Amino acid sequence: MNVEITGRHVIITPAIRIYVMKRLRKFGRVLPEPLNFHVILGVEKDRHSAEVVCKTKILDLTGTGETKDMYSSITRAISKIERQALRQKSKRIETKRKRGKATLLAPPEPPAQRRLNGIQEEEAQRKPMELEEAVLELAQSEYPFVVFRNAESGGVNVLYRRKDGSLGLIHA
Image 1 (cartoon, rainbow, N blue to C red):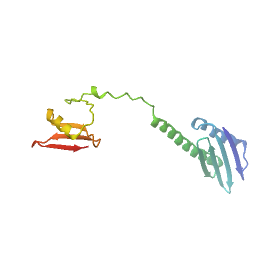
Image 2: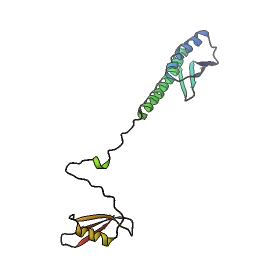
Image 3: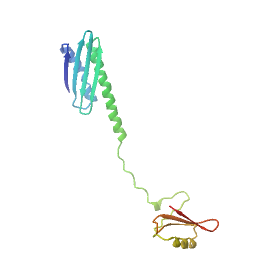
């Protein structure tokens, strides 16, 4: 931790330096290393101001405090930086939690093994056929429809028998 204290119209006494160092010591637990602090203390008439700038690899924090007492100005400026640092730390923790751990997904069951309630599945690997072939297959089968890949268009078609006995064709 590197601390630089600058005084504008004020003499930096050893007591002020010790007070600042004591207050900044706890930032080592909250912020990532390396920490560089620049504390600027100033006096104008009876206003005592303190500005604390903290620079790390990831972020820059700034806090200011202005009162009639130098020590309370330092305390205010450092407490502002402390709130900012805790907020940044909680954001980093939350983003780590949101990412979570990578889990391996199990491969899906093969389609032949799936059983739905009361539904039977059949898989048919067929060659493309023309409409006339599909009409012949529908006439020979017991099912009311035939699903086939049209040889001309390449699309999937459904040929079905209507209630009045005529045939219908659905292009999909």
